[in-house]
Structure formats: structure tokens, C-alpha cells
Image (cartoon, one colour):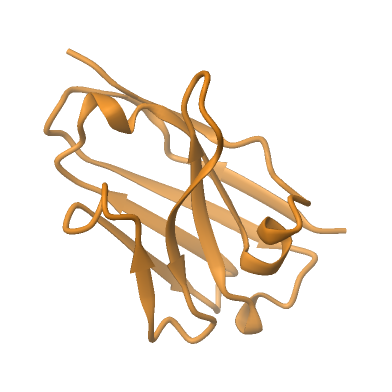
Length: 118
């Protein structure tokens, strides 16, 4: 059974930073491309970042390029999202998922809330 547990969210002022973590189990993490998505109130879930299984390649939504960094530790089955220069429009629930499961809209975790506000 796939389990994804996101953590690290919270309330932060504009311009601040947060580091999200996602611990994965029940999948072969080391061969899974991993993603971070977010969903703001009243909006659809959107892809924020992707990292390939080896960690060699990454891709980002234009809205977060240069501010967010996705990384992974295959020894710990964990994927991270470092978020810098946060803006109010980054406020959302953030979810991680394997890219394949995300495309099937399956196996979402509970997410972690990020609120950017002064």
C-alpha cells in the first residue's frame, strides 16, 4: 500500500522560506519520478515540481522557477521542496506523489498546508 506523508508546512511571512518533506513507502522509491503539487482554495491541483528517479533532472512550474528547489534522498525514501521568497499566492495545500500515480489521480496523501501572510 502506497503511503505518502507530507510535513513541514506552516504560516510564514512573505519573503520567508519553508522546507517541505515527503516520506514515501509502499513503492519502489528509487525508480520513481517524484512530484510536488499544490491546491489553493477554489482552484485545481497544479504541478509545482518534478524530479527524476536519479535526481539528475528537475522541472518547475514557471510560477516557482528560481524560488523553489526539489530534491530527494533515495536512501531515506524522501523527497523535499525548499521554498524561498514565498509569496501570498503560494498559499495552498502541498502534496507529493509519484509522477505515475499523480497522472492517474491516485494515492494522494493528506498534504501539508502552507500559508504565506503578513
